[in-house]
View 1: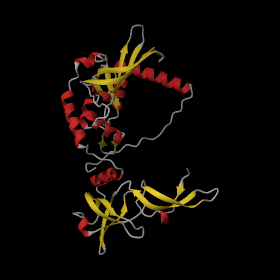
View 2: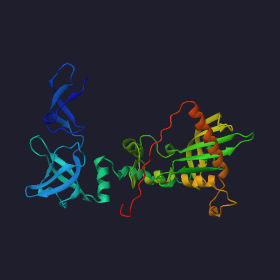
View 3: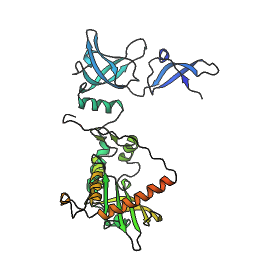
View 4: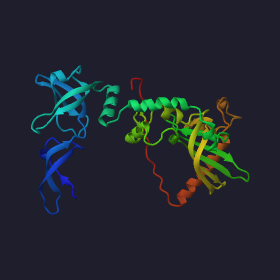
Length: 345
């Protein structure tokens, strides 16, 4: 039931994540149980990323990009394929049974010259087990979704319809996806109906399908500095489940009736259909809040039809934040890092 500590000399070729058989060699009261690996039952992975080095004695991946791979991998000349010195490669370990002898491997893919942007991005993906390609069965199901662009009237009638209510998205200017929107509707008597809408993926992705299994396996989309590796195929992540402006979209929504002091009087949660009328960046939304169309001609052509809605949200937001502060909420002021990439990445 206790952790077993294994010193490097007792790993017997075992690597991070491997399933192993361990023998206990020491139990000392007050110290961690110590052991040694008798054999590797199952490898967690046999593929590693590193830079190829060529010498008179042969080719090696001397240092893997994954620091937990502590051995250098010998590449037999016929197994190097087209890789040359200083190429970043994916190498498959084909044999390693003796900890005193270097493992043997073969190059399965050449990523490019080490140090080049695209090479290092591909290497980062490979080291962490991310794949940019979707399996064939997933792509087959995704292709079928092309026939479901039109939302059936039967589905619309089964949902709460927000398409005539002012709705928009607000995201960073470098946002890769648009999966949440907000709506504002003044009510008689001075209250407001505020809707928070999240893209309803469940209409398109049903349990136990290939897309569902692959999404569960990936767990999340992966955001790198210059690209996104989506959890769902592009037709979903960038199209049918993206709350783009000027198209009807299915959503799951939280809808609140609030008074002018931001007190919630009613709340409702359920499936909806929405129609976003505009995609705002944070900066553009702030510009609208700051603008006066009568004195600032710079905003000619920039639709200000949501100025009152944004002002309403701003007022309610300030009141909500003040309430949270009074009730002891913590506010963390942390720096946000953003990258601006040169044309070559």
